[in-house]
Length: 134
Image (cartoon, rainbow, N blue to C red; front, side):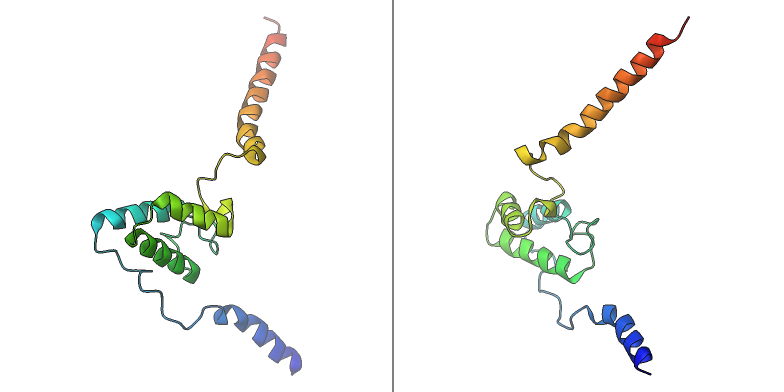
């Protein structure tokens, strides 16, 4: 009997993960000013949902994404620039939250690796074709 209760509790845990609180006011509402809403939408498309990981906060249905959308809209409405908001979110959650991570000395190998692999592949192909008898 204890095993059954444990299994039911274990399977029910994901269903209890969402809160029962209503979404933030600006989570699913647009700002009245079209220019501010356009700036907010553009920024939301560039920010990664921390729950879904592969979606932007503009596309995600996760509660945290809704809270982040509300935060972005509130800060845009208060007059903050998108770069300031992105900087604050990067400081809080790390560069991973942005779909456009900054180029820093620590990330140079990640940016250079695709180019290095292409050059190495081109060198190998050239070498292979140079050896072939005609």
